[in-house]
Amino acid sequence: MIRQALGRTISQSTNLSSKCYDYYITTPIFYVNSSPHIGHLYTIFVADALNIFHRLRLGSSRTIFSSGTDEHGIKIKNAATLKGIDCTTFCNVNSSKFRELFNQFDTTLTDFIRTTENRHRETVQTVWTKLMSQGYIYKSTYAGWYCNSDETFVPESQVTTRSDTNGTCHVDQNGNVVTWSEESNYLFRLSLFESDIRRWLVEKKPIVPSKFNTEALSMLDRSGLGDISVSRPSSRLDWAIRVPNDPSQTVYVWLDALSSYLTIVDYPNQVDNLKRWPIDCQVIGKDIIKFHAIYWPAFLMALSLPLPRRLLCHSHWLIDSYKMSKSRGNVVDPFEERDMLTTQGLRYFLLRSATPHSDTDYNRVQALHRVNAELADTYGNLMSRCCSKAINPAQVVPTSLTECSDPRILVIRSRLAQLVDNCSTYYENADFYRGVDEIMAILRLNNVLYEDTKPWKLIKEAGTDSKSHEVHSNLQAITFETLRVCSILLQPIVPDIANAALSKLNIHDRSWESARAEIKFGQPQHSSRSLNTNLSALLFKRILENKVES
Ligand code: MSP
Image (cartoon, rainbow, N blue to C red; front, side, top):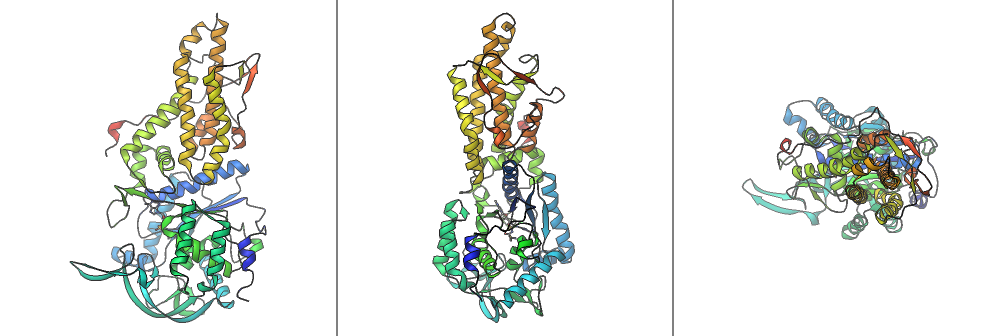
């Protein structure tokens, strides 16, 4: 009974996806014991950019993109107690800060789950009952070092002692205090799944970047998998979901939290009736690999559900080389940054500068310079130049080039031709910085060409000199093509700016595939269409340096 269906869940050979939805992407759900910071915002931006990217690729907006808040557990309870308010009020207030953040930054979220919702309690209790009835959960006593901060038991091998002015305490590898806990609770037979998890990681390599797949494998190799505690006595932790038929116990917060991905697709329904399954992409931070690459697949296998297709893991934003944390007092408030950099500017900087495989330092002054240099001086500048009345009195977009052998135009043309495929590969792996690097390089080349060709002079001669007319029109044609292609590919990164550009250019087809170069070369004469003269060509207003303090 217990080992049934594991092969099927790993191989994912079935196509269980409901016809209603074409893609399902998740973010982790955020703890409500602290306010949102730019690291959280980055997580959402990564998933949002991927959601937009897939919508453009699929030509469908029928995607599920979920986030939410993780509201149970001892640290939430302690934080509420510290504030002197009850847990429900505390969670309501803090959950709404995350919801507000995601609204204000115009994300394309389709669902926001709170673990204190009834729909979620029903899912968790169904999950529990199923695991129990299949024999995967059993009652026992558990003794070990418990870390409140991570809400998890820590293996003895990772615990050391630390002495400071407050005395001696035990800490885990991250320096978090752990306490010895011995209690009666329920255990999940994680040990049964070790070889299947290893096989999944080796054969499917679901975690990208690959270094994190290797890291997950080495977690298995280092410690091997023992059974894990999946409940706590209610007397010790009451701010959690009750275990069905045993009110003396509450459900382990990670089993509770991970189940939220099932709640989103109406899990108590049968697998064939889920909104969509398996999950196409789960965006996670590197600190929660263990839970998503080991516990989560084991729970899913035990439930006979196929495993996620991909875990996209990212590194962290640091401040002066330290991870942001409330206790260190180095947390950067996204609303404050937004006031300085604008919504699109902050989104651009975070997606454009972070490297998923390594941590990145957040620096406000660097952010300002990058946003000004790239969004205003490169992208915005090219747009406003070729739309200006002085250079483009007829307000038209030439859509073809006459016979043209200018090597600079040919280089831009060939780079544009490769851009869609390159960006597809980069974006697929959340390597947004690499895609934007290439886009900016082409925009810069085109700006240089513009500078060298001096269209403001040519336009004066164009009425009488056919050569000047041709060079001017060819320059405008390649420039508008660059702007069209780059704007389509920038939609996941800076959706508002890219869409403003495409509207100004009168482009209706904004799908991913439409970015394949469409300009016609070697035409005997130019064809053209009109710019939208009701819209401004100003894409991004430079931010004044004195607005930003380091
Ligand atoms: N509640 C759990 C997740 C449960 S998912 C079933 C949790 N919450 S968290 O609020 O601590 O973290 C949520 C996400 O934010 C994680 O993916 C984490 O990596 C990410 N980040 C937290 N700090 C971050 C940075 N400084 N930089 C980038 N991402 C960061 O873990």
